[in-house]
Image 1 (cartoon, one colour):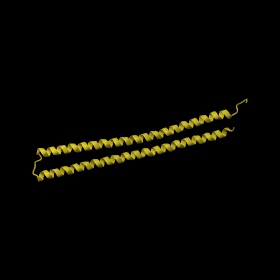
Image 2 (image 1 turned 180 degrees about the vertical axis):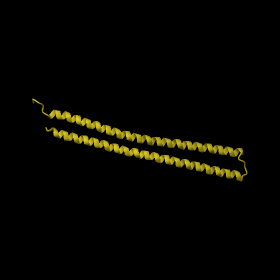
Image 3 (image 1 turned 45 degrees about the vertical axis):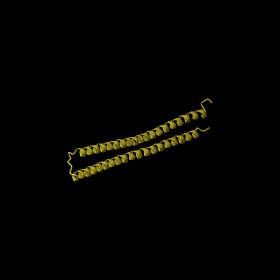
Image 4 (image 1 turned 90 degrees about the vertical axis):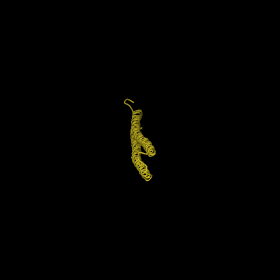
Length: 151
């Protein structure tokens, strides 16, 4: 049997394995890029939500101050101060909760991006190992069919 066929077959297998590895690495890189983009969108969404909450609290504070003035109550009025203190604490709590939730979401997206990149790298390593195995198998098969000296 002609070892040329083994060489061609092995070359095609190696080429195919490398192409598959590169394709998977590109696919995983695209997934990672999308996750990075999603993370940036989440950061923007969180900032917009934060600004909206701050604006809503400022509007509430202005309305409360106007109502206090209309009712001719002093800023030292204990019920007014208690209402404002409770409102500030609730607003702070909501802001902190939203911030933590956003950071958790961003962390998940970053993990997905990192995982996709690692998967792509693993696919490429797997393709290299497969190609090396094919080359070794080619050498073994060639040795089996190639006549040795004195035979």
